[in-house]
Amino acid sequence: MATSKRVQTLLLLAFFVCVFAHRFPALGAHPLLGAEKLTKVHFFLHDTLSGSKPSAVLVAHRENHTGFPNDPTPFGTAFGPLSLVLGVDFELTAGPYSGSSFVVFSRNPVTEPHRELAVVGGRGAFRLARGFAQLHTHYLNTTNGDAVIEYDVTLLHY
Image 1 (cartoon, rainbow, N blue to C red):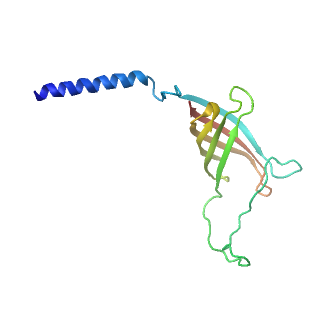
Image 2: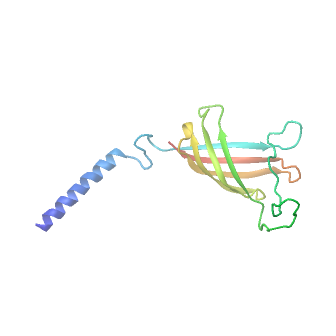
Image 3: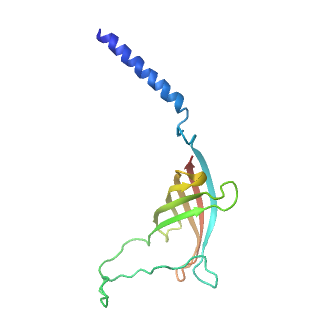
């Protein structure tokens, strides 16, 4: 009798596995959004703070004091290469992905010539995007902040 119950349980389990495999035929398929897609985007970002027509503006400057007025006493020290947290929404304005965007949010060690940052989301054609962006600094002026950075982005999205 116990063997009969085991066989019934195994047959029921096999039935549900077949139904599940039929509903989700491919790895990464979503029941409402369809199959997952891979898209690669390559571009150069010209980040210019200097000159008469800058492409970026400085909104804050780092200070190393306690935060109390008239108290310049240092309260800490940062070690290692200069790192910033980069949070950018890149919107494409032409081509098949016009109006879609992806979001890069990650630690960005700007003094390293090659680095990798996380893609954490997107909208439009890049809805539910995830992936990574490989950055290569081609030019960096540490005096005025101007930079030319190559982005090679790999996106997984629906």
